[in-house]
Length: 536
Image 1 (cartoon, helix red, strand yellow):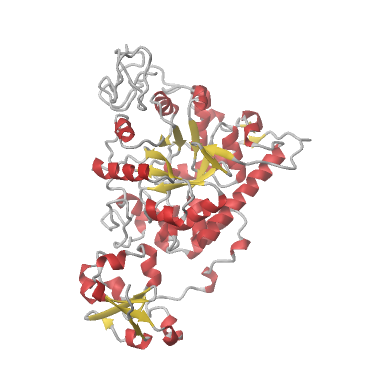
Image 2 (tube, rainbow, N blue to C red; image 1 turned 180 degrees about the horizontal axis):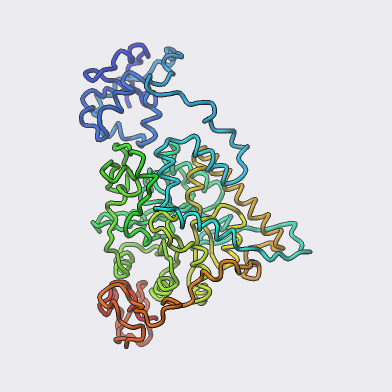
């Protein structure tokens, strides 16, 4: 910006009414008078900081360029004269209660595990931020089972091994990583820290792990790339009802060399009822740059997880994966597989990987814990581990959890909520949590008698306490003859119905040797759930 007038805090403070409203953001003085009635979130939040410094509340919901983009240049009045800043200027608005000492964040080095970050966040972040991040669907059964099922798997350690040096490095989709750990895509990290996903990106870059970028990220892909130029990302796509908007995002991903893969979200056909999130009103000025939805309150409540998901297409089917392939050259994975049946379809369709996830228990309560789905793959389709990469999230809190998943065939695991809670401390907090997880993983490896991840295997774990939870068939085990197909046009057909012949091309363009013509579309037999896709 060109040179502007230097304004004293006393002069700024005098402009504190609806008819004459100045605010300060990042030391820049703006005349907001004409914008008050146009502000999507209403004028009240701006008037609360009229004649004052609004940097903190502004930064919690907006990116730095919003003011410049929405106000004409003549509304930028000048800069604050630093020499006039005194204790009165630094005081919070009269209606805002100063934070109590008991709610202050403890020094970062006093936090020694993932649970500590969660506990600190529960006391120090806003009610809405905590409600959105910590909530899950209805009775929280799946959220809690995600963790408890890991706890019910025991190790079978070997001793008298030389474990002086251990190596946690691995490869994910062709990307060398320091750990079999990535940051699961999680929305709106700016709610907990002004740097939001940028802080996460910088930490992942520094520590050599991948970050999943949520479709509902507070920052764009280009902004994250600028923040962490050498970082590796994958993009979590929520397919929009307006396909062209999703196509535009896919083109952006393909043009961004830091984006290594597309993860199509399939575990969010409809937003779950997250009651803690609904009970706390949303800031209706909240929006995110890569999604069209905006926060609002209605008769159901103020659930961000619900209202921000309004653009997602519940009509997404297996056929749409062909459409995804047409718009990107990047590897395509599914995020949110919860059964061996769909894992098999993904394998037969030629996808590059699947992320076993139940959305952290946030959409369908009593959906299966991800570690149980991983065991189901071993029981029903063990060949899948040689055909594609398998990732797991939901419930990872310890280095031992990482090693258990790796021992059961996972390529890597993701952490979502814990990384958000660590972002409470910015980049430094996320780096600290990654260091903690690496230290715990190395400890678990040493005490199990292994020095590299390729030495991990099922022989290291005892799953007897959860094996009875693992399905062995696509149907119900104790109700023989019950219709196996209960969705779609063929609902009620028996499992042994005759198959119609079809020429089915894989979505990556490869085909069975018996197929003479390459098809760029699914060739289906009338089903929309993909169960009639012929194996390659």
